[in-house]
Length: 264
Image 1 (cartoon, rainbow, N blue to C red):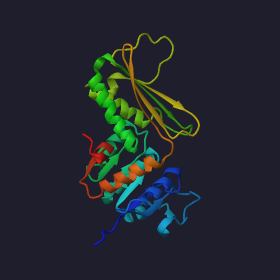
Image 2 (image 1 turned 90 degrees about the vertical axis):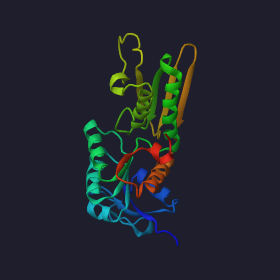
Image 3 (image 1 turned 180 degrees about the horizontal axis):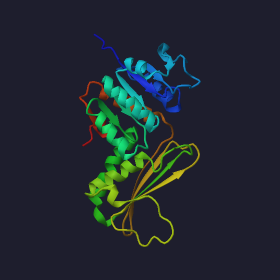
């Protein structure tokens, strides 16, 4: 007997990422696109999409039609959606970035009620890059300085990127420290010598670049470079759909993309 596909709701279904998520859903037989939502007043409200799904603006109706939601939007919108999803028991895949510490705590609280995957980057390759960055930091030891450079399109709202922060966190964790203790996000003027053990993160913005991340481990007379370049948004969407298929039916909890891939 063929199993009925799980219903997926897409937040911002008419946007650039929403369009790519809808395309990726068409390639995943265990899921089907079932609900679409946009902000009230959006000119596309009522637009008919694949499978006869109409873009709406009512969150309650949207969640009733969804077994799992995929959300790439902005923190305020995502938190409102997650609060209501938690009340209704709907699992969520969140690719929104730029959350404050308070907002992150609210996401953790929601994960006590629903299954929630939150990732700064749903690319499978980037998830592996984060793993490799941590392993490199552990194996190279304190004799190598760590720097991260990221480049994104001119319209990106937050800086540094969530992925850059996650890469820096992986390095800090491998070194037994935290970003609060060693993160450096700007250098200007007479800064003095580089502080031992610090992790630098620099953000560049311009054009329509979907995202680039480079991790540099700089030693005496040698350096190791790890990097990832995105040419399109498709792999972000495919990763989010993969996470949604993995998440449905999981117990409540806050999951990361590395768990979706089975990484330690």
